[in-house]
Amino acid sequence: MTFCITFTTMVHPKYDILYSEDEFRAYVKGEKMIKIEIDEEIPVEEEKTIVDEKKFAVRFGIIGAGQGGGQLADAFWQSGYRRVAVVNTTTRDMQRLQIPEDNRHVLKSEGGAGKDPSIGRAALEAESEEIFRLLQGAFKKDVEHILICCGAGGGTGGGATLPLVKICKEYLVSIGIQNPDKRVGVICTIPTKDES
Image (tube, rainbow, N blue to C red; front, top):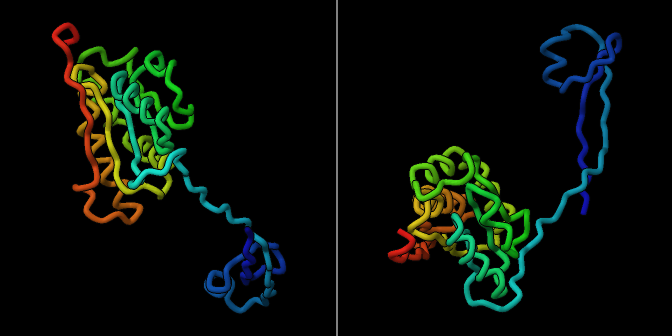
C-alpha cells in the first residue's frame, strides 16, 4: 500500500538550500524565492495480525520470565498460542524452546541470576524499553490480556515478575486497552523443597 504526499518547499536560488515556506520567509527576507511542489509516493507497511493456530475465546499475550517461566510460555506456544515471548538472563535456558528467536530477549547479566531475585529485577528494570519493544513485536496490537509466567524459586522469574507486570500494563494502555489492572495476570510455580 502506498499513499502520495505533496509538500511545498522553497529553494534559495544562490545556495540551493531547501527551506519550508515559513523558514524561508524568516531567514531570507527580501530575496527571490523559487517555490517547488514535490509529489512523492511513500510506501506504508500494513501491520500484520497474529493468528493463533487454534481458535481461542480470548486473545492472550504470554510472556515467560526465567527458566521456569520460559518453559511455561513454551507450552502455550506448543498449544497453538502465537502471541508468546520470553525473557531470561541466560541464553542457555532458552535453547530448547520452540518460541521464535524474534520473540526472545536475553537480559544483560553476568551468566544468569542464579537464585537471586535482586539480579533478575535489576536486569529487567535496566532494559524496560527493550522489553516494551519485545511486546510490540510479539503481540502487536492484537491482544486483550497478558499472562506472565514465572517460577518463584528462580532469580530471573522471581525478580522480574513485578517489573514485568508494570511494563505489561503500560503496553496495554499504549494500544488502547481499558482497565489494564484487570487484564494482566501471573502464572507462578512454587519451588519444590529441593529447588528452594
